Amino acid sequence: MRGRRSLSVRLIVSLAAAQFVAIVFLVPVMEFVVSILGVGVSSAVNPDDWDEYRLIALVQNSLARAPDARVVIQPTVALRDYMDANPGARYAVFDVRTKEALPGSSQQLVAALASLGQIDALALKFRLPTDNLQGARGSLRLLDTPVGRHVIAVYGYRFAWADVYVVAKLFLNLHTAIVIAPGILGAVLVGWIVVRHGLAPLRVAAADIASIDVNTLHKRISAENAPKELAPFFEAVNNALSRLYAGVEAQRRFVANAAHELRTPIAIMRAHADNPDDAAFRSDMRRDIRRVQSIMEQLLATARLSAHGEKELDDIDLGAAVLGLIADFTPLAIENKRQISFEPPPRQISIRLHKWALECVVSNLLNNALRAEPEGGDIHVRVLEPALVEVVDHGDGIPLSDMERIFEPFWRRETSGKGAGLGLAISKELVLSMGGSLTVEQTPGGGATFRISLALRQLTTPTS
Image (cartoon, rainbow, N blue to C red; front, side, top):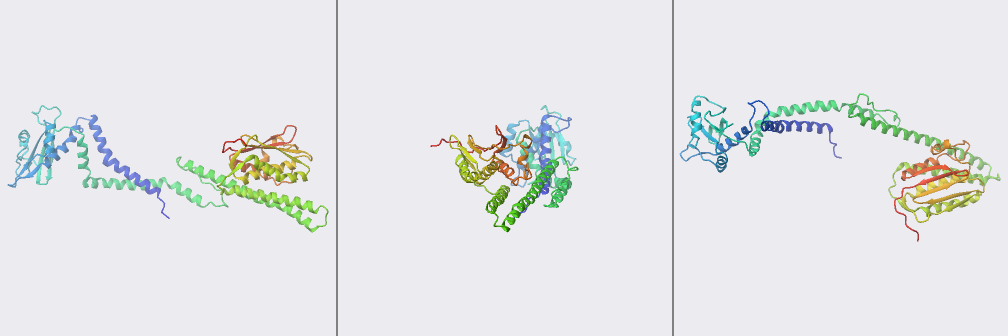
């Protein structure tokens, strides 16, 4: 298993990289921009000063040793091109030991700098008083060249965009790396301290979360002292814990209530089993077995709904599926002296969903309708476009105040009812999981009409 990437390391490296870019690139770039815009006092860097380094480098590359061991200036092609482009530019090179100018040096510069013969200058900025070029300036530097130490003086240089590249090459060297190394190390140290302090609330929250298990889901992460950037994360985790706690509590109540619901029919079945000669033995046993079967089917449907493991959907003809369920319930309806009528859709309605889920929902509604429908009554089932299923009974109906409560788990209007109070709650959850809705309204003349509205995943096609 690959190790996880550290957020602290990423933040520290990012801060150090930002510091490096700021020192090495941003500061020189800003200095360049300031010089170009002319912002600052008169002694600030002039745009032409950036060309000083390029001209000095061209002159330095033109130094060569003659056959007689003398150092001479042999202008390279690059230096000649530069001089052609800048007619006012001049250069001169002086031997450090003899103070003499090398052949090829500008005589004007040699004469102007003759008075500096007694000064060992390492670097010097100057301007020729007799020069008529406006803004012209000069620079003198003592440099180590391939042919020895020499003083190189340049004058009249002018800015060009190629100077930026040359200056960058001059500054990005080992000397610069040594100078900025303490700053980078300082940035890493400061970044480590800042990141460690900034992530402290996350470590505290992680410790709180690690202490939460299935028996302590009521605990929450304290977000009172959390930074506002982390507060939404803590609130989201707390909300997730609240939903998980509510779900676990619902499951616990579900198991407890289901166990309680199963005890009653099982106890009755045991009592009947002790008196097998009772005339009502067979009918009572069948009734109790159906009740146990109904509860078990509802428990199974709930387990399948919670698992979320089934990915494959079934292609279903909605009308045919509902008609098949009605056929299964017809013997039971006849036995209970009721009828079930079916109104098919005008055309085939093809949908994609879990077949078992649809059968569970419709079966629950039919089972409830059989109990609610008066003896001799007719339960009306119809399938409508675009993808609706209605189950209509003509019983006592549902008061408006109980319209929503009937979908709550284990809720029953009458405590003496035969149902477990699970069917409608499970049915609503199943329909919601299929992207539909389950509603109820009063049947005109008395009774209840349950309507299943499903998401139509395919267009309806005419029946042949």
